[in-house]
Length: 80
Image (tube, rainbow, N blue to C red; front, side, top):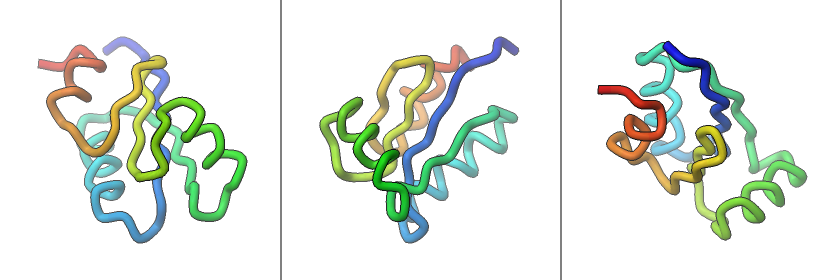
């Protein structure tokens, strides 16, 4: 599998964030997780990239996916 740079912007209380991270783990995709609830720098970075304050925001190789969207994530990761 090709290596992708995946960053997840999430919060502890967000159930969709947990679903997205679980999905990535199930598919053996390595990712960096930024908890925007306690990291203001990561929160500002997320808003700058996505224009969104809601989580999750997933950055796959520079492609921004708002929310847990399995089809878009599969497409960005070139999974079947």
